[in-house]
Image 1 (cartoon, rainbow, N blue to C red):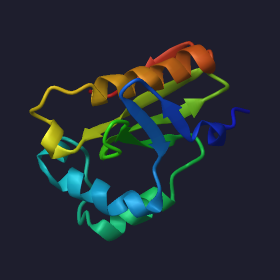
Image 2 (cartoon, helix red, strand yellow; image 1 turned 45 degrees about the vertical axis):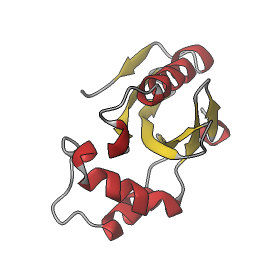
Image 3 (cartoon, one colour; image 1 turned 180 degrees about the vertical axis):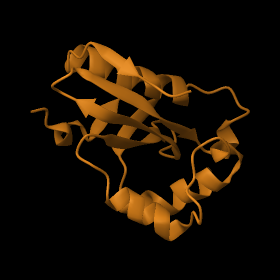
Length: 134
């Protein structure tokens, strides 16, 4: 069985992906209620407490990452690899969310985060398929 805990950090040219931590809940909550999260599914009564609960109860079949700009150290977004199936050799990359300040600025954050996640799934885990919701 694939041990996803060994993939807590991924390094890129411009960003680093680090596994989400409970203390990131407030920041993720702010992004999700902003224009950045306008098209993300949000349960009825979505709140900071529900975001914290959600983050603390993620299954072992997913990895949720914080996107960190390497030059500034700022947390600029999040991305996840979910529905990881070692048996079927597939996974889903999604939950890409950037901080609102980066929505209308040219930056490499989202693209490089996708590239790092796809590289992990296809080239390190040797899975055959990546799914995604757009």
